Amino acid sequence: MTIKRITFVQEMLKFMGLEGRLHLEWISSAEAQKFAQVVTDFTEKIRNLGPSPMAALENRTGGERGYNRAG
Amino acid sequence: MGYRDFCGHLIPHGYTLENLDELEGLKTSNVRYSLEKVATHLVEKNPDLKIGIIARDCNERSLNVLYTWQQLKPENIETIGVNCCPSRTRDHADCSLLEPRETGSFKHEKGIDFNADPGEFLENHDNGERFDRWMYEFNKCIKCYGCRNICPVCFCPDCSLENPDLVEPGTLPPEIPIFHLVRAVHMAGRCVDCGLCEDACPADIPLRFLYRQMNEIVEQVFDYTPGSGIEKSPFTIIGDKVTLVPKPMDA
Image: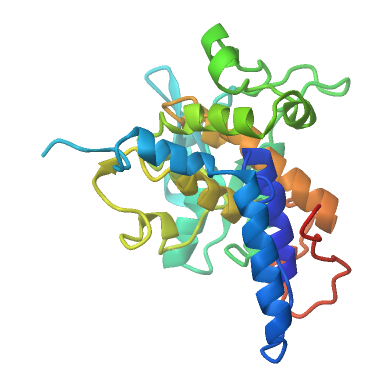
């Protein structure tokens, strides 16, 4: 079920323009070294991709998501 | 459940055995409503109610999905077909979708064409540009919930888009693009491409294009088309064997 959902969301994010920022890996709690390796590699990959375009939006509006409705 | 002429407009109307003379006003035209959604509300209060519905192709597909999710019982529903799509066997056709919507020039530049082809969209624009175009469209959202209200296959009594912990009440625009992506994920395996959401949206957001792409993905990856029959969506079946493999990190 997880793999179905993650595959779907990966394709959807690609369509949206946020490709490559979601990754799925099966790791047992006994494989600590593999976990450390995967996290390091993925952090590096994300760093190379640059800031998310959504973060750029937040900065543009001064950190607020929108404006409050009057009243 | 059908339509009634009211001052020149057609509105949904339920004809009952007690009011058979009202049938004089029954008409069809290119006006479309999701009558099956009204039927689900009626059946909530009265589970054994037998309902006949004036149904086009899109209504038939939504009914199939509602049967799959057990919102309606097939033995209690009878459909009466309407000429909706033109063909050689029918001399006239009535559907509001027969004329494709026009997209203005500004929308072409900054946003997304209603009638775009998803394959071309993916090829012609890179990541950054796709994101900007979608954000242009979603920025116009006023959180009217029109898309959710009119959708024939949306039936959750506790909609997650109304949950105050997930979507902060009282601010506009809603947290984009998450708001629309949440709805898009819920539409995977359910949307039958009736187009009522795009018709209802006051901000002209190309929702049909988005949900159509979602279901393209579902069709390609899981080989499932909602509305084609009474099979369960792959997202509801837990514990089945799948041959999908997670993508490697450098893909």
